[in-house]
Length: 297
Length: 213
Image (cartoon, rainbow over all chains, first blue to last red; front, top):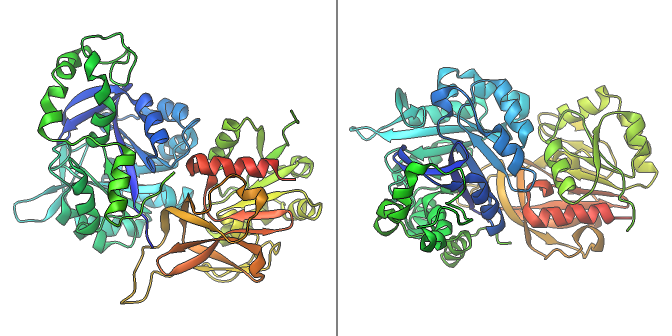
């Protein structure tokens, strides 16, 4: 028997949880901390915290955030973004993360995965791979939160990072990210079947059936879900959208002012258009009904 | 209210010590991370954490001069909890990357999980994720107020087989592997999963250890 992990993915900018489409046009949905605690209570099996601007500015802002939330959240926490050297890895693990996902730095410096795995164990080193489909049907690895192509073939890179000691692969489809059109099943299946380590599928979940598809057809060992969860938990607050003083997930004091228009217009219409919001429990019970085992609390 | 016991988390350079300490802090249980033999000797309970390779773990325990103080601690009858590699080290020996002698506290061996034969269900190794823990016996202490089959978080490639079946107090299934996920012999308990990152169930198990006599 094999159980699938349902992982909540939080893309973070400053204090806020953000969500964009194809890694662009990020909007703040609320305070990351509030969402993280909620996802823990709701039964998310793990969490991935993705620092969306870390690579761009060559720093990781999540140290304080992880230090705070890891005091009260007791499921595996992965930090991704802006990890450039083994000292960064150590700082993030010390702050309370259980794993790091290394992307940008790994292509620039292929030994970082190896050194980190030797120093801290493969179990806490994930290779983050962001993939974009090419015209010929192959996939290319991109870096810097989907901003820069590398010319590296995704399947070959996946096999290499496992040789270097990566314990898992966090595989994100740039084409599907934030679209709600479903995971890239072919990408996921190709990578999952080429490597002996678990593959976490990320990017594209808009309906619960997408999650089932990426487990069956994509052979994903674990799935990352973002928008479907975010919009479910943000949803009850829509009624209060005219108030910026209300306590709640999407109306923290530090939320970007530029977002108000977006939030007031029902998340820019995204709710109606692309996503079927679902709770963590709702998704798990749907999967259980479809014969997929998940942790229940 | 009784005074909480003094718990020392053994720092032998092979473990996620801080996540265990954070979990104990959440339970209002003070703990110390230490490799100082005097501190260890004075503890009420010890936790032997561990991630990584068996050989390296034993080598570090010897290198930091901890074999003697740990042996004396166990002989005194005070409770010991081994987590993941810490559970495996309790055994007689391991076959991970060659043959390595363990702590010999519980007779048993450590061997590798099998991915499965062609035609069978195959699984990836390491086993990463949440799996149900099925209690073989009603171990009142460690499993108090936990539901049989509760999910815990695993991350391992090797597993323990105790010589005395009575020492295996819980089993877990992964692919075609049915392995011992918790063991117990007198004052020594071990768990293959990570209670410190297994949500509310994991915290409850740690709390149960804190209350063990």
